[in-house]
Image 1: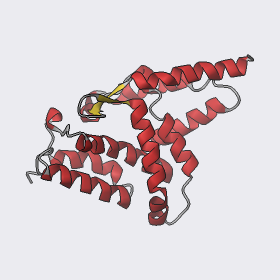
Image 2: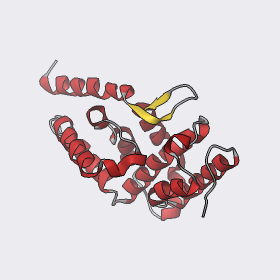
Image 3: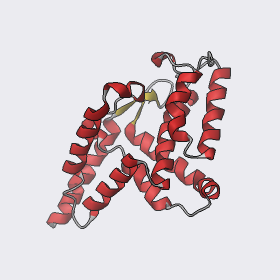
Image 4: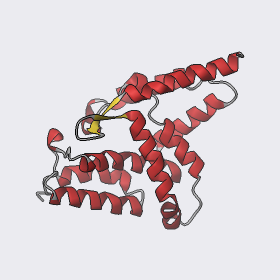
Amino acid sequence: MNDHLRDKLDFIFFTARLREVERHNNATATRKESVAEHSWHLALITWILHRDFEQEYGCALDLEKMLKMCLMHDLVEIEAGDPSAWNAHQHGQDKARIEEEVAQRRFAPLPGGLGAEFLALWHEYEAGETNEARIVRGVDRLNPALMRFLTGQGWQDVNADADALDRLQLPRVQASETLTAVYEEIRDAAVRQGLLAAATS
């Protein structure tokens, strides 16, 4: 095996560990979701809704780029961990610094232009400035709400009501009318089913 292929295989071995990283929301009623499951579901949701996104944006959106972002954006969490979005204020710059260090260590050395591609995609996702990145970041934020609803986990563990959930979700899902409509459907159904306390204001 040549050195370039060995480097890629080592990276494949590394990425397989994403299955071991647990998220804070459930995958089923009895176990937590892995980050690998989360990334797969993001990619599928993005593919399913891609034409809706294009219709509302009025332009072509690079689906290949979006799917790649979905699949790779959380690889840094293999070493950096997956802090809860509900405690983001406790992590801040430390999280960004640690994740950047992991990205440079794990992505940059990849051969044949792959390292540059991974780094560029990850930085584009983190910056959230392109249409594709804004939408993927919105799907990323929507997904845990979807899973908390589907598994019956609810939001009691984070002491959240509908107002608190809006404050967390809307800054990202409002990148798309489609995502906002899906989020509002999930939120309202969760309130009706007693999984989420109604807004108090």
